[in-house]
Length: 315
Image 1 (tube, rainbow, N blue to C red):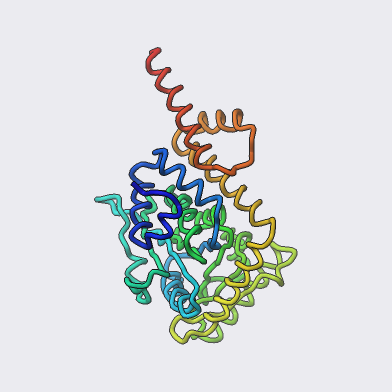
Image 2 (image 1 turned 135 degrees about the horizontal axis):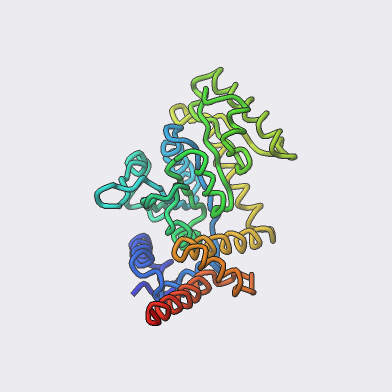
């Protein structure tokens, strides 16, 4: 039994690990759905999607962020999306292996690796439920994508904030625009800033690309960060912390969460039942107030499964 949200908060990391296992093994169980909807109703933390191409240094940056956040007594949870093993289907744990700042005894930090299960967008379908659960417990939830090209922008559909990582000498402003990633970030980091001039050129190219895609491009922070020297990491922590304070106090936060929940519910129905199921959901779902997204999803899964069973029986 995974218990209530209060039990989860009192039980520490071990209780959270059991709850995440329950989400994977019994996502439609009544107690699972009740716990997730309770967590959705009581958000405590801000979710930040950390995205960028493979090799840009996302895991190393996340490792630095964990250390700096914990130094300020800010609790942090990490969902590290790893490629799926071709043999077992599980996560290869490549990203987690780079997180040197982890202290198993520290109750203020929790890391969970998840396989992307072949999803083109680099996200497992379990990421949103896990994120919602972690947001009820931790100040910041970092979601590190696997890094798979243009489709890595999918994380912006489930996280309240998106951090785009770009490395020096990775292209000019036109190439950034062609990649399609300049429309999603709330803040941008040029990694490996210790490379000097090439990092500064990348920042200038990013600013030019943002100017094309956003009317308020000047307000999007672009930071030069180095995980080796620590340059810019404290500034990034301050920006994320300020973003959380400003975001959680505004009604836009609730609106954004409703939108994210509706997007997840639609995608989950489509993945399981195809366009037929999605059309049924869109036709029947007249109440767009997603205050209980997991109960809503569960009810439609039950309805659609019943329809399919009846069709099989008729044939």
